[in-house]
Length: 481
Image (tube, rainbow, N blue to C red; front, top):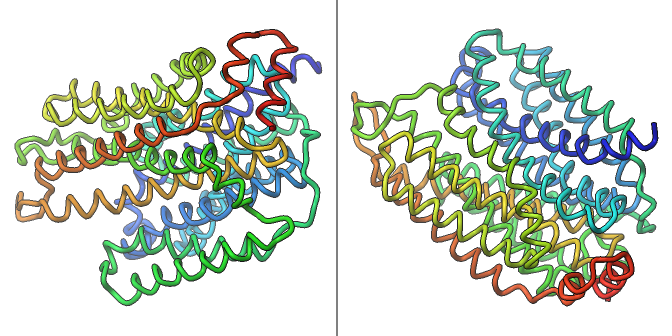
């Protein structure tokens, strides 16, 4: 029985990562109909996405640090439980206030991936860690690609509460599997939890992400948005000062400032921007009315199916990305992945009218995302001590989230300024979509340059020279040094 549990650890953790991405995605097909279903205005309904974004961004580094200190399995189970409870509350109510609060609870699931990656490092032999981490990183794209069409099917053919009942059952199943199959990691960093640091980071991130996500609605020069950004700068400046003075900081800024840690974080932010533009723009473009001359007028179900090949590709290519990292190093894999994303956007710029080319371009972007996302946690694992892996990967995931939020705002700003009237309603022009592709592709190229600037891993050369257990231990010693 113990051997079976050990063999199932990786698939169970990967299932949890897919669930997390599904939970974030399933509400998207509901958004157009929720004002009618809940009696709330569209501006309030949009908080069902914003609440999850904010809570996920705040809780990911906090829960990562808690996992390093109090046990990664314990905190992982708590995150899965909060996700499941949030889904259950959504299934039981139509009150918009309760729905928004429940979606905020589901944001805790964003910590599942960094916690799982840290568990894999602690529990697996070095020879198996690379492929397992690559699979875990790919679950974000896999879950998003699966969640959208499945949720759209449920919304189209059943009561919308049925979707949340289904995700509640899946969440409970995933929680039970994790409780049974995942062992507690013995690697911990004891000390007192930095509560003041957690509150300061939460306040700064809320100001930042609220300003980015609501800037288009409130107006970028409105007093509220300007006040949020000013507050963000002041709060995070004070937070950095407090972190540098704390005995056990929430985020080790001195470690994070090292090039081998800071550059992967910067690349994660840029890659998150480039990755999100693919699904965001594709979903809008293929649903545009045919009267625009470029739109295909597809339903949300058909739109999800267009993105599905990208999710399947991410699943199939995760072992390949691990092999590239083992042979050439994760820095090369990251640079290659961001370059492939840029090439995918080049294909989108060349042809965004034919459905098959749209699918090909989106799938190429997903391929690059697989390579990049699989390499990022490996770079972090090699650059930080074992006792800080969950918190460091939590910060890396946070940077991806910020990149996605900035991408959403930037794409919206571009499309709003490039519209034409179709049937009396303003609709983005094809030129606007192409500009969005140019912007995302350029960011991908900047991410590629940042990846190439990451200092080489001194341990990787030793790994290639020696595949035995003794060599692996020597590499770990070098990495710690």
